[in-house]
Image 1: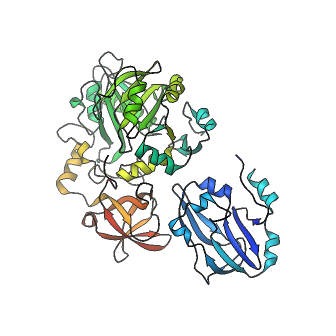
Image 2: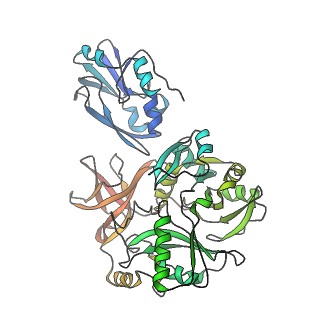
Image 3: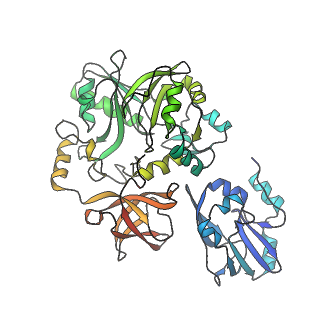
Length: 127
Length: 364
């Protein structure tokens, strides 16, 4: 099976993605991750104003069969949360790189992006 | 130790199943999506490969006596083609495993067949032969787990589906009745039993003919993931998880399967269970519904309304039918009434919850 790995964003080995536009970054999990989890039924996310640290847990995603921690690829302050996931956690399965996004951050240091995997590198990891 | 594989492992792999280790077996956990498979069983029909379940045959002049003394139910009540749910208990009345016991038709070599849970077949084979020798009984015990494949076809359309596929009618079977019938020329032991709360059948057939039968029963293939969510909605016990002689020793009365215990028969654990029944139980198996957002899982603490730990969740999931988090577990009897306010500790946070009646959904 092959999975989408869009090349307009960066990746973490633990299957989170980060996409940056104009200094704000959106975070989510990859197509591969949602497929591994199966039906997502619950997402626990931080609140606006919370500070996230690169490499540390920021939330939890639960499918019927598994509970999985979410790790932040970058450091920053939460400026937006995808509230739609409270009622429609299945968006993570249906559109992991789009409507299934999780939080929006104001980045502390864009330089952190250089430490992350490119689409090619992440694609190799899950191949 | 490598995992045991069901006969149709390659067929399921080609169909795109993902697999999980369970009871020493590598079994399909999901074919398409647990929710889709779950819905198919509640609304239409689904087929499960449950070849990880054990099969043990017991025959000989003392077969009935051996079965009677090692299971809690009354096997003398079984006519040929009948089956019953029973517990296998130790001297203290603690459940070692739960099982279905079948009395086979008279023309068969064996008189009884019972189905222990995945990974318990060798333990039960040893238990049966050890006790037979200790009691000097004349009975043969054979573990035929690897000779058979077992499928469950469950759902509102299951009776029509299996009925159309069998040469001899199986529609006339009552709940817990079984007979031999052939599917695509393969002789199967077809029982009106299941683990989903839906109508349907479980079929046993020679492992070598498994693919012929699987292909003849065309409906949604379902994995262990959906099997688990379906049985949790019904409040059915899962061996090794909702009771376990080492991790979570429970009597049938605590586990609310006292109806399988016939104290007017002689069996290992009877005297202990008679005392438990007289004295009453301190803890009971209950349904739990979360009021706050969150999902309770195996091992999470249950608290009273003030946050004091009173029990433990043994199974939990998001119910695909209700779209609400449901759980099963044990609490002290005084908290066991429906609608009692309790809490469940989810990742360090206390979530409001209520004791709920099981089944969580209306029986179809």
